[in-house]
Structures are given as C-alpha cells and as structure tokens.
Amino acid sequence: VQLQASGGGLVQAGGSLRLSCAASGRPFSRYGMGWFRQAPGKEREFVASISGRGIFTYYADSVRGRFTISRDNAKNTVFLRMNNLNPEDTAVYYCAQRTAEDGSRGSRDYDYWGQGTQVTVSS
Image 1 (spheres, rainbow, N blue to C red):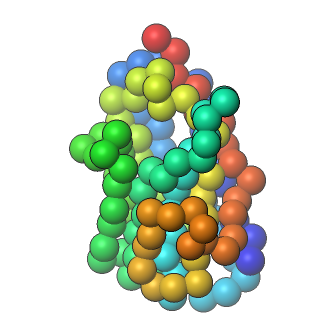
Image 2: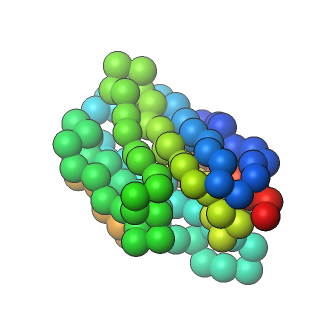
C-alpha cells in the first residue's frame, strides 16, 4: 500500500487549503482513512477519519466545523478541506489507512501512513 499526500502550503490565518491523499495497492473503498497532524515538539494527534464507504466521519474537537473529510472511491483519494485556518493548525499532516471499514481516532489502529505534507498558517 502506498499513500501520497499533497496540497499543503503556506496560508494566512482565516484562509483555506484542501489536502489530498492518493492511495494504491489494495481496494480503496474497503478501508477506513484518517488524517493526523504533528506540530513541532508535540505528539501526533488525530484530526479526522472516514469510513470506507464515506458514511461515517469523526473529527477532533479542535477542527470540527472548520475541517471536512471526504473521499472519492472511484479515484482512490481522500480529502481534507480546511477552512478558517489559524496558526495552531500549523503542522505536518499525515494520511493513514487502516485494515477495517470504519474510521478510528487512534493512530495505532492504522496500518499504513503517507509521507506527510506541511501546512503553515501565518498570523
């Protein structure tokens, strides 16, 4: 399995970005996907997850209402739309895939990880 994240960059506070994660290697729609992030000096934290068919989503309290996770199973891609960004959202964002249909908040529940994409929000 390979996961390729993209879409990060530098944005001003209040701005928006959309991250993408392209997956390959096994049937995409069978597996839950998640986004996590890690800021300098901090532990990796859960951001959002989505079930294989896209029916169920979960969000961290810190991003609920601002971020939206979605997936296009025909294109083997999961997205993270991030609105109203603030400097506290600055981190490397990672996509991950687990070997189960549902999503999960726990990083240990994921088996495959992408390489990460940097998101920097300036004040």
